[in-house]
Length: 594
Image (cartoon, rainbow, N blue to C red; front, side):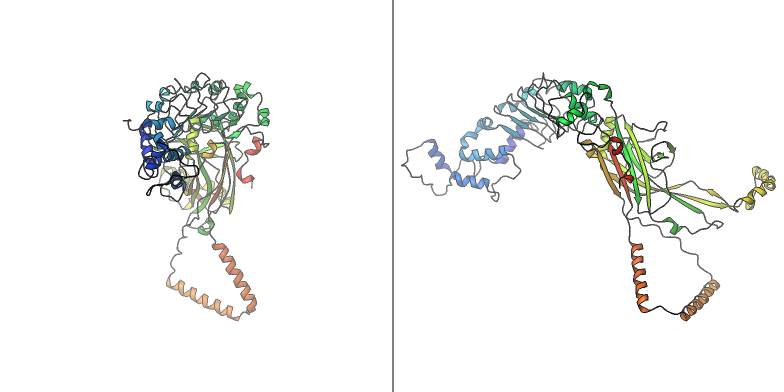
């Protein structure tokens, strides 16, 4: 009896699901005489066919029941060719699949997403097995002694393999493809297992989306695999290094496909000599963030009708965009202060605010906008564009190049995505008349003595001075931008963040007028109506035209516009041969590409 969670147990369950002994497969009343005749053949006259007894079916009819997609015995369209073959063999020669004979027939075994945890020694019964696919299970280690020596393809992607020592002990000598993508391999101790001593005939190797970081160490081992033609490394932290592809292309001259992209002679020529310059392989990545136009902000002037000298405050508004970037990175700006990390328990972020869209400098502003989403597991820093006053279209023209030295953290950040927010800063300035202030303390007494001296200077200034309150920050919108494509072969994520339509707060209601003021207002209204009645009216045609125009304009004014921000993130890589655009031109701000 196979142990639960093993490959053998999953295979036995799969055989039961195929129903190789049930109608229309196997032996039964539906084909008994036919198979009896095949085991004890008798001479038949030429041109005559043996009659099928009542209640039985010919093999052709039984096969049609398996192949017809409308038949209740048909397999799903996405089933493997091996399963179809087993079902047909169970119709034509069911005796071949009885007992242990089934292990002699199977050359390809696919067990996907069945909760398998162990590659047990029961696999050795498959003496003809050439392809073993165990993707999307829970396998953490593989004992190579349990693998058939005839194996040519081993696929273990989407598992939890974290160590290759057992797999590399006695691997199948004829193995041509090894798939270990989407596992938990991390350097620098795993690279030593990828040499010709372990895999002399390896043609294809998939190590994509692991956590390998040592590019130089891995390439030195892979260069011993003389038969290697296909290599997948995308999704690893080492693939974020700008010179990653060029260094591999020049270091592995026999490689034909790298990360699903064919290597052409022109590309090899472009990167020739790079393998002899390992000093260019720095364990860091360069990422450029650009923010362009911001549209859809409500006009705050509609809610601020106070003049200088009134009792209410003077309100000023400014707007900026924030985004999160992976912790441990360094902005390219020289002399820029470090930002503050946002850890899992953080509720407040310290912003790094750029004072220049061209990244010529950076100022640190200890502003505290409210947290907009749940904190992420990885640490991050929050960066912000410089604040700008309201406009129909605010051109942020923001560009910042980040240097990320923690490649593992950068990978985690790209998998999660970034948070982009639009923040409004409101500052209330209250009018203050120094001469009307009560003087009650000692400092006030001294100021009172010097008032006469300063009187002449104050006359030259405005009648009122203003005292500003601490700024009030409000998050107008927040969205997540997906960045996973940067882990593959894409270099650029460009999107327009849509925060929806903002519904501004209603302005305060006007104060209630007293009865006399109301009466006076009514009298003025009557006089105004009488005066209008004396004026000449325009033609009816003109009236209709003006009315339609007014309605059209009113409709346009009421048309809601969503709040949007142009956002772009680019991972700087050495360009491919087909890409003639320089890196300086590639990293343009979003606002300048329109």
